[in-house]
Image (cartoon, rainbow, N blue to C red; front, side, top):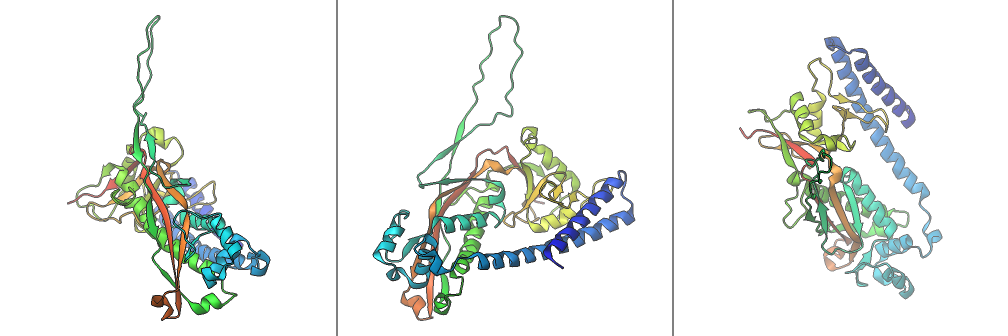
Length: 392
């Protein structure tokens, strides 16, 4: 079955799911509920199949569209590839001059290299799909890492007044605050690459190394953007958010329909009506929520059909973020609100270092290590609320 046929089958199943709900406006009969459960499982299986197929197609497209090295000449990507395979000694003075023209602070000709803008942008873009936070937060790129503050102001309680004739208007100046948006230096940890792979001209060494960087940098930054303490690391969205709902006693490994409704309404309507609000939780929590039904047996979860009709819970889209704690005693397992109020700041470009020293050479390897500078903070604590399980 082609990927297009898989997508069409998945869309048909999703429409069938929604049509069943539309055709049963009252209490859902038991046999209909079972039918919905079967459709949900089939949609999930198709989603996994399509994701694997899309990944394979993307890898093949990258291979077919990659220009041969001899055609790329002295382009930035060609220099990057040459440096990856052979080290700084392989670059001519003119090529090093080209590198220095786009260098970031802290790079040197003894083993450091500023990743070309095109490659750096690809890595940053790929991080968006890794973990969840970059897909919903506002991302700010700066050309330096100097300290900066973000202004904050909560106007949800402010209101005007009625004036009588010849009556002076009262004054109500908005209150402003600020939060520091500090960047921290992140390391990918060293990546060891066999010399044989570097010497193989047909090997896509750039993709191999960049995939490792994306995985490692994506995991650590997403974790900090989610639960970072704000001390010597970014302040996570869960750290900056405020509590919206506390679960019932002994409700340690579950969330109920009422909890999600209460959490939704703990966020001011001014945020909810913006169209930017979403739920966020770990995949295990999503699995539990998919089984929830309202008082008439109607599922809270609706499968997505297309971009205009994404999967939703209580009518809101959701983000799966494995850095959000799973359901447990005192855990903050579900977030809801406007995540665009969380600002991620990326400073400058990605810097790579290459190591040919004996620690790697004795094993027939070359080491690579990447650095990036990034930070994040929730600029409006009222924009995102969390559900917390009871402690006992």
